[in-house]
Amino acid sequence: AQKVTQAQTEISVVEKEDVTLDCVYETRDTTYYLFWYKQPPSGELVFLIRRNSFDEQNEISGRYSWNFQKSTSSFNFTITASQVVDSAVYFCALTGGSESGYSTLTFGKGTMLLVSP
Amino acid sequence: AAGVIQSPRHLIKEKRETATLKCYPIPRHDTVYWYQQGPGQDPQFLISFYEKMQSDKGSIPDRFSAQQFSDYHSELNMSSLELGDSALYFCASSPEATDTQYFGPGTRLTVL
Image (cartoon, rainbow over all chains, first blue to last red; front, side, top):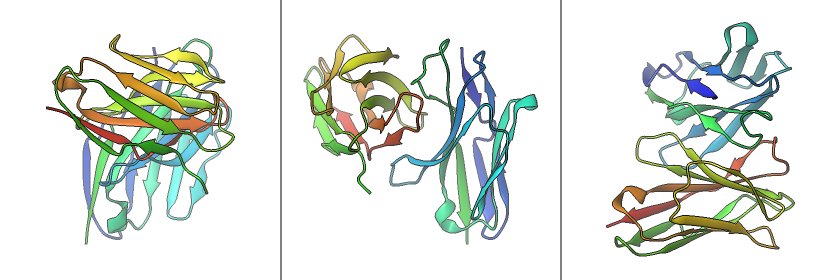
């Protein structure tokens, strides 16, 4: 069965600090997709990034960057120069291939990030 | 850009009542998913549909049923509501089953 572990339940930082959210996953599928979603206090789930298992290239989008390491089954998310608006719960998620169901999103428990001014 | 639409946004019901949640996917998305998120929990997959056929089934109670209609909108029907059904219910849609799932704003169901 698939599993996503976000060991950090809550992180508090001060504005302008860099912060890294950890994500470790387990799957038996050889083809899978990894995601990060943001859930602000308003409640909606906002898509941030999708990465397939064959693409280990790191990605940067503005202040956000993602580090995918297949060797350690990790897909970590870094926010550079954090802002108050980054305060939210961040979920790492995984979909699988034929063994786990192509469309099933398995979420981690989430990491609550609190950025204070 | 058009997003997933869910209605109603808030719903209050009594125990043992029924509820119907509606979802309108992003245009040209033919795959719809339903998730349930309890307070302080991560979203849990309930069920999905592709081209109006059920494609995957998760931890959906027997008291719940869902379907996707010819215009691709989907409805989640919940009967004999229990206090534990109080949660945020998300609908998501994607152009293909392996593609990114885009979530609607959610329906917050409160069962009293």
